[in-house]
Length: 324
Image (cartoon, rainbow, N blue to C red; front, side, top):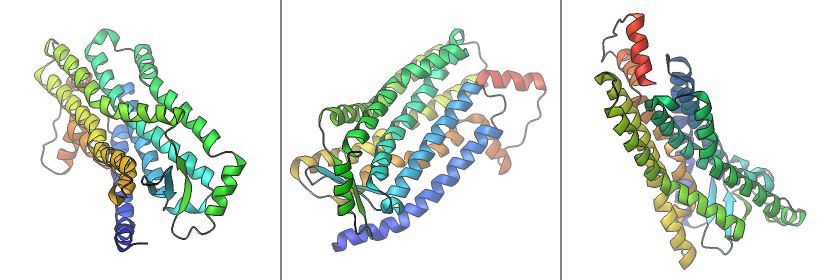
């Protein structure tokens, strides 16, 4: 191991536990708000906010327990596991590698669906459970299709006995890392790769188009100024969340293409291509607590920066309905 690589390992030995526990705390806090302090928020929004949080928690556990590293300067690309799960059989960590891609896709799509639900709510004629359920299913067709491709890859690239035997011999010494498998951009994996990368760049475009339509309808709505301000704050928060996958994934994706084409070994890219896309799991809770007006007001009240307001039940119900 080179001195630079040792420096990376020393840094990650500190970074990974700190990031894990900080993200875990923030995700549990936001789940507490969603479950216990969401008031009269309608069920679809509570479900989608919790759905995003749970997907990000699963993504966090996979990332930190496996600590994947992509050796993109090798042909084919080799994937190593440096985390605690390096001691388990390669087929399981390879399956988790595919699951990591699935839940990264799922958490990003969840934000877009939540934003679309907001559009349906402003356009009150569609704010019903069945249209929302149908919209959820339609938006997740690419996710399900990608998941099917990932299952196929596990069956063909990890399950065969000869592959498991070869990796078992390769992984006799796992004191530092184990090899979970290789990645080849052949037909199935290439299709899945295009879907995953394409989705990351489509998220902000879709979110801003949906947000623009929602704000247009909102301006024509008869809601109070307070109600409209709460809607706008929620929409702004979701738009920022939809940008995070691009901001965190794009740099490592560009470096990945560069390393594959040139055979360059770049440690930041090799580790960062898994760590960076997990960063929204830490940032999203802050955005949710900041841009969800009821959550923000509750926090400001707790810290003494906002006086609690006493309102009658009719006014409370009116404000709640205007937000959800």
